[in-house]
Length: 147
Length: 107
Image (cartoon, rainbow over all chains, first blue to last red; front, side, top):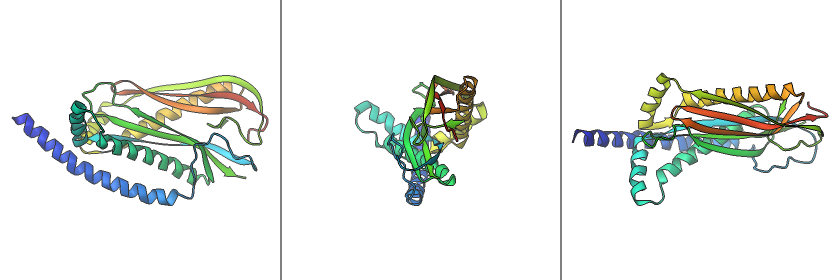
């Protein structure tokens, strides 16, 4: 009985704080993405063929932890299968944040373009299924500045 | 030393390919950080300590790759890739690899 109460408290705390944090994060993501729109990042492997460019490797990464509510919902979902939307938003946030950090670094260096952007996502909390996941998203690319 | 994840550079010629160079680094998180992350796991949010740890780890791996490239006389590393794997709970391996080349104009 006591354990049930603990779980209920943690789930509601996780729901409350987790949702608040997520909303705040999405808001700041949208704002910063708009600001960074003038610096295009591309997945293309071909650098532009005209003119000379100065280039440097830029990267951005972020580690995001899951909250208790998300872990709980995902645990339930595992029984029935199907879309785990709580994890989808988590990964979406992590990737967008990583890309933004990369762009911000490139912007500081005065770059005009970022080429050959690659994403990499990993779970750094280990293989044990007991521990809630910590996700790391890493984005890297080559920032080009026209000479 | 020029590091890039492009396969070639416009206006620069590769005069010699020297093969693959690599660097890796394994880092564990210390207990204090682990406890903090346990708390963060309730509420969600960014784990700044881990982000920094992995960043440092990546820098060190890149450093090692550059050392190796310098040892074989390269002046640039092209087509650089990163990879991360978690070996056990609490430790992550960062691996960086790329092709060491000699460029005619490495500026």
